[in-house]
Image 1: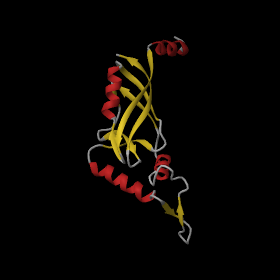
Image 2: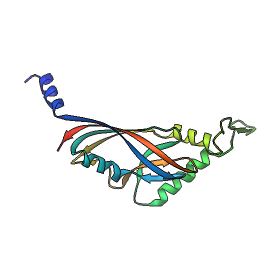
Image 3: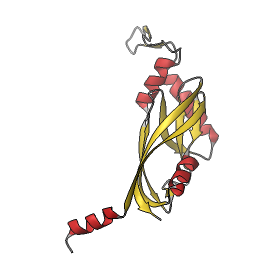
Image 4: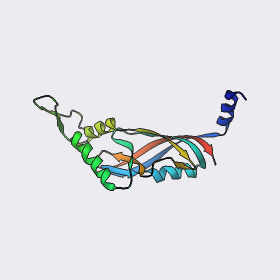
Length: 164
């Protein structure tokens, strides 16, 4: 059988879904969204495929990290705060001049949140099988809020997969 015909036959059985999922954050920190994503896959009766996530904001991130020891997330937050301080940062030159952010219209956390987002991810592409995202034993998917206050965050979801 010609390979091109086989590929076309496989694509006929694939489902494509576009959606938006919304999450409420309680300020700076992590929200484990793994179960919400697995539930979305299951509710759409999908067996296997690819899940693409795009966070529709410039002051929060998506990350995959450990879900067993909460100290990992605390340490990540503290480390990020140490390399991206609020109000200003010190130049890397010999005189260590203080440089103040020019973008601060929404508060002291505004520009640092944008920098943190630039250093991390706003998109993830994940595979799933048996209606569950394929992750390691101690892994979870987190929405990482970089702002101080409660926010409503939207994630664009694009799935291409086989139905159950």
